[in-house]
Length: 454
Image 1 (cartoon, rainbow, N blue to C red):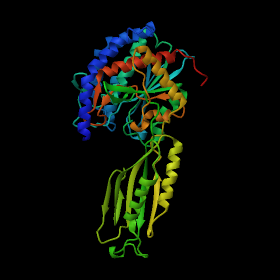
Image 2 (image 1 turned 180 degrees about the horizontal axis):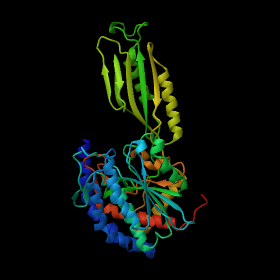
Image 3 (image 1 turned 45 degrees about the vertical axis):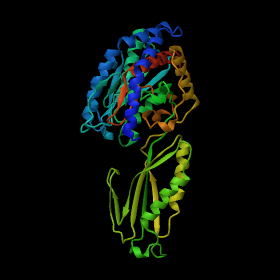
Image 4 (image 1 turned 90 degrees about the vertical axis):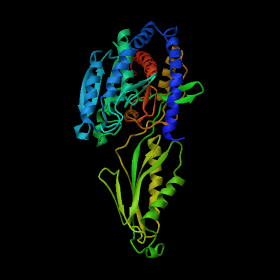
């Protein structure tokens, strides 16, 4: 089955089950005796404001905010900013011109000094630039197609709906919440030390981090099954460059000539394939070329090569990515890759380099798992199924990883969606409200707890 057919099939399944599933969630939620009065009030507020929330999200989606569209990202900021101010948040725009990007919107609510500090993470940008034909919101029953409807304007809609419910129920008053909306999650600015400097600083102050990217789901017998996400893998790049002895092809393999750059690069990559496998580790080759010349462009995403069939290749280049679940796994794998590269065939010499501007890993920890336990307590009280852990190999890298070394976190508090990063991207609209209820109750309970001395 092609990717397009697979996405279409899942979209059809979500449409088929979303109405019944949403009705079940909405009818079960308010009646749960396990919810406090304030929590029941939050549920009612979110239900009452469904039309408002949906209309708000539609306006955001219709404003292009591709990462490189600096004006567009700022325009979405201007739409989002008042939603926080009306709730008593102070907002700040952190300009990221120094990193070649628009900037980040930060909204802060100061409650009781003794209460836990929560960091909410989402992003303003999408992968769809102004030249993309995919630009507008289109409602199709319970599903709505649109750039960023799920990733991640839908996540921001969940945040706003949850905070409005907390305000109405009075649980926002004592809460210490910082909302950090990056403007370059889909294509981070450079250097990364500047682009993520302020997010890292907020993570050091927080007691819990909640990431509002797409809800993780599996296809169940009766429709999508919600999963909890407590880990994300890293995302980093590597480059292998090889030089060989240029000579007439009739001498290939002879002692004075050797095997040339392309054979050596092929040896390296195939050895990676055979010798690097490890749990949760992936290593992809995304760009390759070789010949008499092989030149990468400045952005290292294009390669121009020249050569002839009767000349032994003088140079070869390959670039790829490396995704791991822990820093230890990254270092161990890099050491293996360096050792493989060093065992060059006669007549060739290779070197490998690793980019240092990637995304770090968010390994599964006891603290993250405890947060999922807190979310599952909310699920039980709402009459929803408990969420098992998502395999982190099924999820890409994300901004929460930059704070993972300093604070416990949860991923995937945004809405359910399909087709992320494709023109088939569609958000399950009822899931926005379900996720907002989960988030509002979870944040209210966490905010009622004292800090542990951090």
